Length: 214
Ligand code: AMP
Image 1: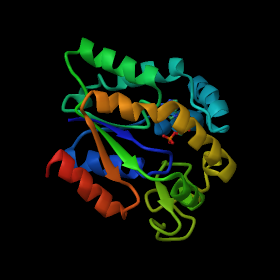
Image 2: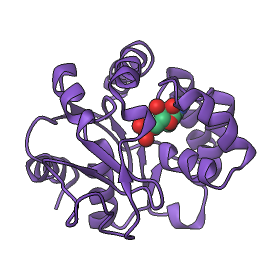
Image 3: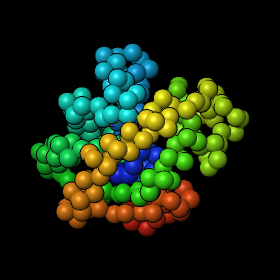
Image 4: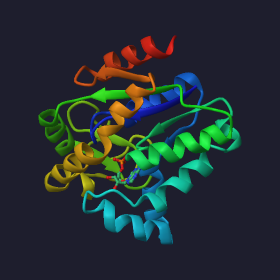
């Protein structure tokens, strides 16, 4: 089962991707998480990616595509994977299709978690992320058990630089210009499924399970 999660930043695709990975036993591959891990470890890739991420811009395809193409060929991806935050541009999608074709495979589903921009801005200001393990929370909808402390690892949770309102506005502009065209791209391949992302998290997941099968 090879799945792509589409949706604006803050639509909840990461949360849903993790739940899909758990239920269907496939790895969750988040390019955002990979970049953040690299930033934390001070790698060259991390340093390069950070300059784009902090401005709400996309990391260039040259730094992103090879990383994912390599990752999906890992032993743990034999039964599929769920891609979260990739592809984000048409050239990335084409490169992914090309690589899969070379392996005699193709994507099965592109799930668009649909949320209007107005809801996104509200959501993102409440989002908190653990800088240590990457877990994400929301002060209203998914609060930490202890305020300001990550449930998973006990480190501090903070408002990420790229979740600040001015950066979110930029990320939404980038989303509409560069990522939204993927909706038509996957519609054209007959693998696009849309779920209403304004529903509560469990209802969104229920809709996804309805698509993927129980
Ligand atoms: P995310 O956690 O998926 O929202 O990603 C955070 C940031 O990482 C994005 O705003 C981009 O700057 C960068 N990023 C993540 N995935 C990609 C991608 N597929 N292409 C380019 N930049 C990406």
